[in-house]
Image 1 (cartoon, rainbow, N blue to C red):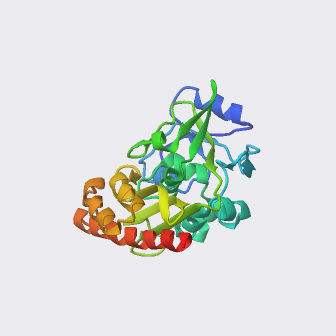
Image 2 (cartoon, one colour):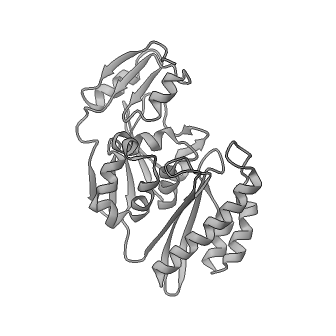
Length: 281
């Protein structure tokens, strides 16, 4: 299929992009386009205007600022995958990157695009929630910051409002006490996950503290398994696996039944718990 007719504009600056978004009609941002182009061609998206932000300077940087790692919205997946800053200070994202699509997709796809699109089976939204990250959102009124816990609001729904652009994400830089784990199950490498799990924790003597277990592919948004988190903090792995029955409420889909997803969630929890334990040994 071919997309419905639309106008195209190349934004000269962030302010220019914001102004165009605030005009008449239904405008959409074009960054990497790895999801948008497909939905356009299937006519699932019918914007009247595409605002191309690829020429805006400064949105493709990865920087360390005051204990935080700031990742610009136009940073490509491949750029993050090669980044020494990401590898050292955001190891969870470094672990997740090779699982995102295929090299051609990672060469064009952007971090900001993945977060703003908010696919519930995608890796990066879950990672951002596990990391306790925050989103920097720009509009004609200035900038505001939204915690990842509040950003993902429903199926493909986020806290982004009309006329707003995701400018960057900020993540607390990892320390020597930071522990991370990541695992997913797919039919083929590069496919969206049937079930996936991103986890962070802080090593505290012989135990783990501040455990965050975030599942993807099991709901309309990334899902924190809070009861399982509490059990894992007590080193009660079997109890944590059992708690997933209360934490997760997946639905049947074309990949697996809800029962299969719950079982696989427990399998992944044991794998990720092992990663956290090895890292803290």
